[in-house]
Image 1: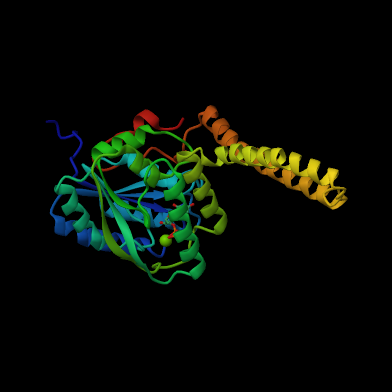
Image 2: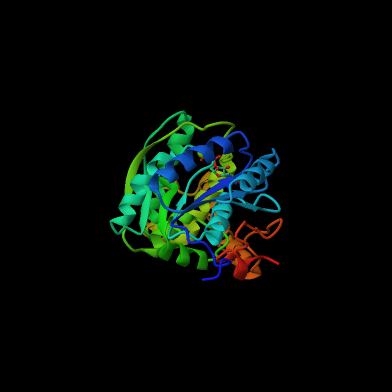
Length: 330
Ligand code: UDP
Ligand code: MG
């Protein structure tokens, strides 16, 4: 084996970072403490998703001091799910752990995940038992979202799980081959299959700063989850069409009878107007749902790279990333 040969690592930890400069040093220290206790070679992949608060410098400084830290710097903000995807692309570990950079996912849970992995599970996801320090609005929308997606999507995405999870190399290799643009990684991991299990943990308070997921981004993620794994919204139009047709068929004999008995109650202007507005509304909503799918189809057809890097990452070993070479955007 030549010394140039890529150093093998057992664990890759991937953290997406969007303006988290205040959290990164502690994130690094806590992950290092946990990983050193596992006594296996590891790497920490920090994906800078277009930060503007100095996170980039903090990440680069860390990488200079510790060669186990791999900096990946995006040319702009591409979004959380894409940042995690880049981390998976460049990871080399036999197991990959995804954590939030704000330390809401305690790294101290990783050894438990690793233990389940050694037992033979390919996906070990974190199940949120409690959520400290989050608004009732966030808790409510999250609870609704998990339950709704569970009901209507075709893959069974475990409820109350986020992206905090350990993935076996086999799973990562499949997921990095799935290049869909509107990504919902939890769904993709569920789609892959294999043996999956969960470990419960208490979701901690955010270490510093504010959530980078405003309502708008949450809604987009929810739409990606639904459109990515279900045709249900498209079928709603069909069901509504059948329901409207049924109502009109039932209405015919009713109107005939009313006419014959001399009752004119059904023929007001208001009734007509309401019917027209209702059906118009339903049709516009159905068009909008179609639009959501067509827009996504159009994005896929363009086939743009998922992300753009500021520069190809280099490390002390002079290695190229596993998947990055093949997919590096140019
Ligand atoms: N994040 C990112 N790009 C974005 C938004 C968020 O990389 O466009 C990162 C963020 O830095 C954090 C993780 O994704 O490490 C989760 O975001 P956040 O904690 O704001 O979400 P929440 O926990 O409030 O749902
Ligand atoms: Mg968070």
